[in-house]
Structures are given as structure tokens and as C-alpha cells.
Length: 154
Image (cartoon, rainbow, N blue to C red; front, side):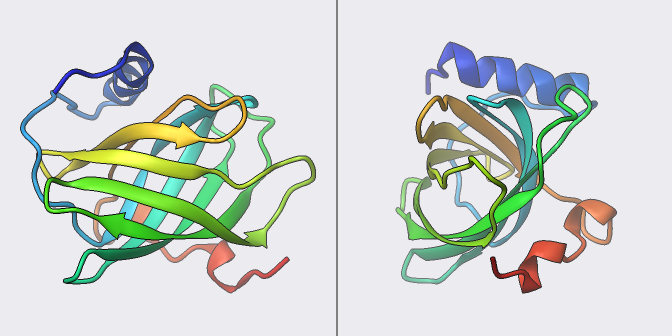
């Protein structure tokens, strides 16, 4: 699998944060909390995807975005997503309803590929957007804690 330069930059960002991110063969993606970064018009932004994948490949999730050290001015927001995961590990998620919408933001889609079952990288489908890179959140950590967005409706 050949990664685009923007995805490589995101993987390097995750690696600098202390996470090993060597590319590997595609493997099945799993339900759970995925955390990382994405790049859109507002700049590098923190992301968390709470994903549920059914046995038939139907996928649903909650996509959250937030400020990170490299871009502290980003507001928190979240919206629902739905789509499919195919047998080759390709994930396609379309945006759904907002749960928490900051002014001036739009929902985006995700088209990703599972790598070694513990990385999800791909393209963000929206205006001014490029790529994303997510890793599974560690169970029991604050990274996997329930989000304030789960109960929010804007």
C-alpha cells in the first residue's frame, strides 16, 4: 500500500507523540474508540471516532474534533457518521446529524484503510480537507473515556 504525502505527515505527527506507526498489511478493523489527528482548513486538529462495526459490515460512529497543542484555537464539536467496512478493510463513512456544532464548521466524510488492524488512515472528504490518521485508544485511559458529545444535541 502506498501512502500519500499528507498521510505520511500525519503518521509522523503521531510518531512524534510517542506512538509507533510503521505501515503494514491491511487487516480487519474493529469497533471501539479511535484517536488521532486530521487536517482541514482550520489546520491540524485532534479527532476521536467512536466506531461500531456490525458483522455485515455496516458501520456507525460519532466523530469528535477538538484543539491540540499544535492548534489550540479549534473549538470542540461532534457529529454522527454511518457507512460500511468492506472485507479488505476499507472504511467509508458519510456525515450525519450534528451533536455539537461550532459556528462555521461543516460535517465531513471519511474514506479510510485499516493498516495492521491497529491504524486507520485515509482521506477526509470535505472542503479544505486532506487526510486523517487514527489509532485505537488505550482501554481504561482518558482517551477511551465516554465523551461529553455522546449526550449533546445541537
